[in-house]
Image 1 (tube, helix red, strand yellow):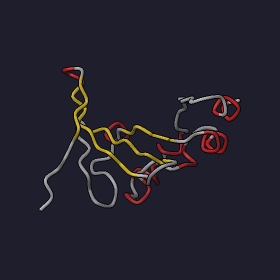
Image 2 (spheres, helix red, strand yellow):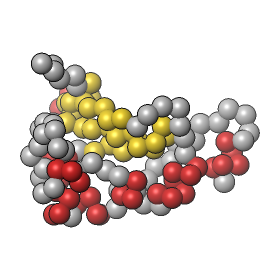
Image 3 (cartoon, rainbow, N blue to C red):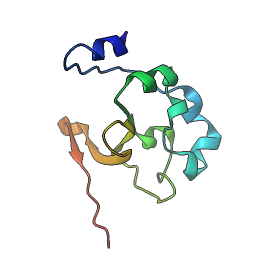
Image 4 (cartoon, helix red, strand yellow):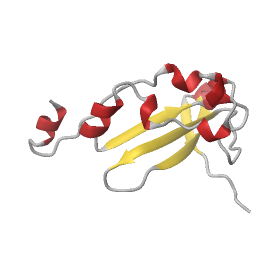
Length: 114
C-alpha cells in the first residue's frame, strides 16, 4: 500500500514501529558491540525497510541499564541516540541529543573532541 502511495505525486510516508525485545537481552546489554539497534530489532523490518526511504530508531540506552554506550563508550545519562538505519539519499549515521525533558526539550549534543 505504501509503495503505491509513493507513486502518486510527492508523498512522504511516516511509519511507526517498535523494537522487539531482543534489544533487552542481557547478552546485548553486556556486549558493547551489540548495543546499537539493528534492522532485525524492528518489528516487521523486511516490509518496513522495503517501503521506506528512511528508517530511524530513537534509543535511550540508559533505560536498559547500559552505563556507557557502544564500543566508543559514549555517555548515557540523559542521552537519546537517533540511529538512522536507512537513508535513501545518504549514509546511515547516529545523532546524539541531551534528554532535557524536565524542561520539555531535547537538545543537540556535540561533544568536544580533542
